[in-house]
Image (cartoon, rainbow, N blue to C red; front, top):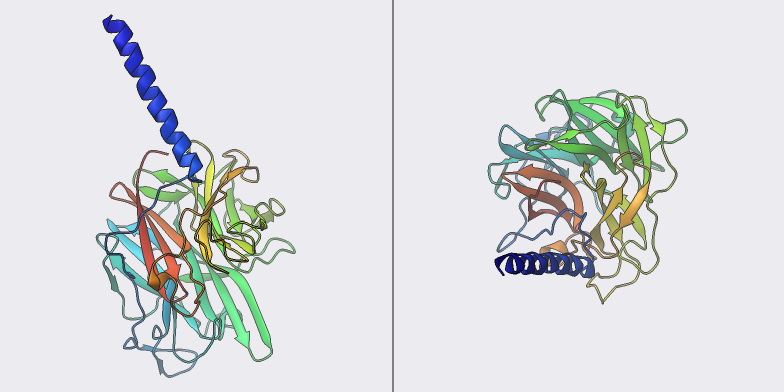
Length: 367
């Protein structure tokens, strides 16, 4: 009788487990996804513009209010038991989306929510060999990954904007301390010149996310509009590894574009790539407004990073709070770019309406 009762309990708990998984899938989150993510209680922007911040611009040769207009689109990494966020900051000398000069600021936090910003930017257009690629648009939309030797690799958009001439290129910079950066120039693979949005595959090592090699190579998802893949033995010499892997899907949250998010994650189910989707018409049934940016997830093979296994049909994060929908991009964004593992939780950092930085948190389970 006792054995029979135990078997019944096992069956019951097994049924409950299956029903729970089925519920997650019904909500649009397969069991391979990272999350679910929730915003902190009484959520508010964790980084905001500061008109008082002044920086002596080496290009303009004058002091500029480098983060007066907007602070958004963050990268994140854990260093020395703290979370560091690199964020895109726009000065007050321009107008319109893409019409300001961007520089990358650095902020640090001991809890992942309350940040102290450094007084000056750490990456910016200067009198160096990249000024022709970065002036006067600037340095935008970073993603950062720690390498095996402790070096930090930063992928960012070099935005050259001059009268009658504009060009965006995906650039790479490295640092040992997150403050002093060495610019290595654009990422180039044959005839491919990626313009922005790069997600390097990484893995969990203890409580750190570290760049991962698969078959002796690094793998970099990239793209705005549609997502493709590059590979490299050393982060310097790149080769195309695929055509389009994630494209627009009519009628869904990514109908207008798919764009890479934070570094991709190696998991027991495969490689999880979080990405940004921009929709076309409003999708009232899932609460996504016209031309809003929300976040999705895709699963790729752990042995063949070009092989797509699955993809979410609905966003796992979307603009909902007033400050996620009020800023220079009024349609709203939860533009995901930074992901860290910190104190047994995932912290996901995102840009809000091209004006602020927000955060969402999820419990960590071994992946």
